[in-house]
Image (cartoon, rainbow over all chains, first blue to last red; front, top):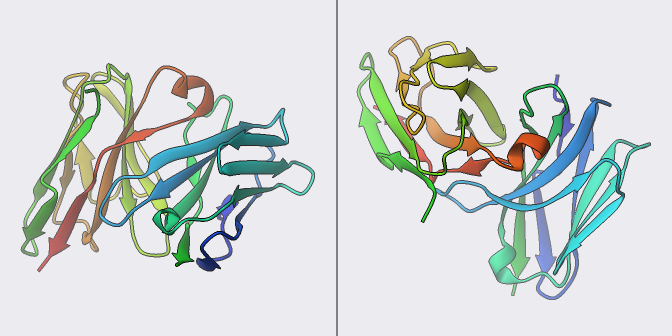
Length: 113
Length: 115
């Protein structure tokens, strides 16, 4: 049972446009959500996060939106740059679970020049 | 610079051989983790350790073993019992604010290929 789902395995966007990556979750106990970015043959790096008490968090070109009622979050990248081409993982954690992260399957973003 | 070092980066193994992947961190983090990445399957937890001399199985522990004799080190052994060992292995640690959020710091990964 996948508790964190990224239903789009891939996404292609033109440079300068907005990239929107989506993530759905089923466990209502999740209270912290993170996005990681991963290049091939490298470890994931933390990108941005959001607590369940918020519905939006911004960091430069990256914004994460959380819709708790829909159990849905999204990562917006604007403007998209070729260097943003990578796999993006959504992850979630819950209080009392030793804060273990549950990861989605990832979305390959390709930003076309 | 603080970080997590995994070695080797690439490793080839014949079927039936055990192999040990090294993971060392100098972040002074208490918790360490091993994940496996396969195409289209995200990251799956193999083993984790929250304190020295203690570790727990993750979702896919069969065919793997670990030890945690030192805070800085969390080696993973891929045994011959692991049916599909070819994968990209990631070591991670958690400390500081990560204990409130779940944020992990990852190493660069080790690519294991079984011939």
